[in-house]
Length: 101
Image 1: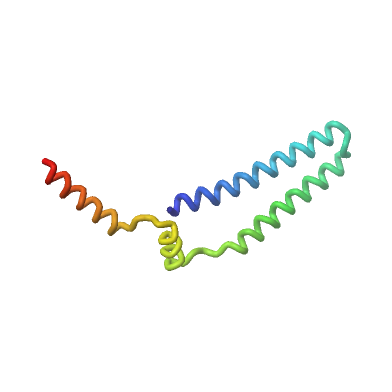
Image 2: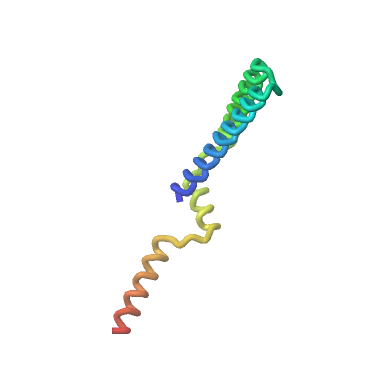
């Protein structure tokens, strides 16, 4: 479960980086085509960096780590099997396999 949460966070970071990369390329293309001056392109790139940094900080400030109890509640709501339930299923399966032989 922790790996899935890490993957979600990394996907968010990756999409933000990809968006920034595409926006920077767009600005460079506009400068190359003469639709923006080099100074305007630099200023726009700096503003993109600032905006991305601010949004990332805002998001990081809003996110708080889950407590153990909150994690248990979340997993319970997601209806995941517990270790005990899985062990019980294994035991029942073993009994069924023995009686089938």
